[in-house]
Length: 328
Ligand code: NAI
Image (cartoon, rainbow, N blue to C red; front, top):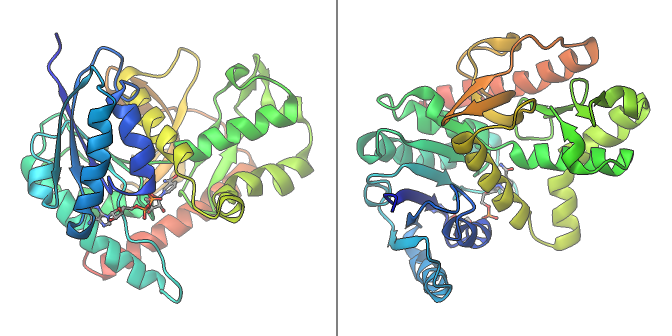
């Protein structure tokens, strides 16, 4: 049998945690033959709730779930971690300025980055889900100088999946026929879902759609504002779909993209497509054997360029703000 993989989940007692942990334990994160040790990190007041979730995990008798440990100490929770899902974050509350939000999250992601640096396994892969995800990933990465920078990633897979679904609805094509869609930029309202390189059953998606007004006035805002629409409808933010996207992100990173397709991940820029080096921005990526690469050589039209630039500008401003706060 295979050696269990250590998977650390922060914010384990939260609503995404509740949707995520059962799927990790049932083998959807890494594969149906990979046993896992779950490490749950929570703040002290939520430890009891995390224990409740752990009791339910026990009650599922998952054959692949080797052990569960719960802690409020990052140094314990990240010890030997192979995969870290950083879900717990400080949400923006009414009247909170951006600087306060970034500072509060710095207080979470800086110590977690340091604990990953000092205690995680050499092959650690980090996915940041907690918002502002791209910049939180940057903060954690900066606190982990001994970990290769590219191991810190931010989640835009939910945006990617939302875009796939909207495009499928518009064209009547099954989701499985759609390939090479891209989310560029920040996981925020400025993100840019790009269908100009996407294919639907082998045909160019923008040609199939052939409706520029739909693209600009319907598709892009619907994808970018979907999180707010879910809150409005459900009375709570996306949780099961966010957990599903986190599973997809790590599964693709570990097990690879399908031939002829790619996915979207928030990753440190190498300067490709004019995105300043080091910014954690969403790109089209392929993955193979646990490593990923930015898809190169795509032609970026004027429509796309303006939207990518606007989102990257926002990321640059967030980076400047956390730099001014001494968080990176
Ligand atoms: P939630 O509020 O239900 O749960 C968050 C949990 O994190 C709470 O149990 C809290 O105690 C815990 N937590 C807070 N600080 C912590 C720390 N320092 N260490 C460990 N745990 C800590 O929130 P929910 O709905 O689970 O969402 C979590 C985050 O995911 C939010 O920041 C949300 O904005 C973000 N999100 C990101 C998405 C993306 O596409 N990137 C999509 C949906 C949500």
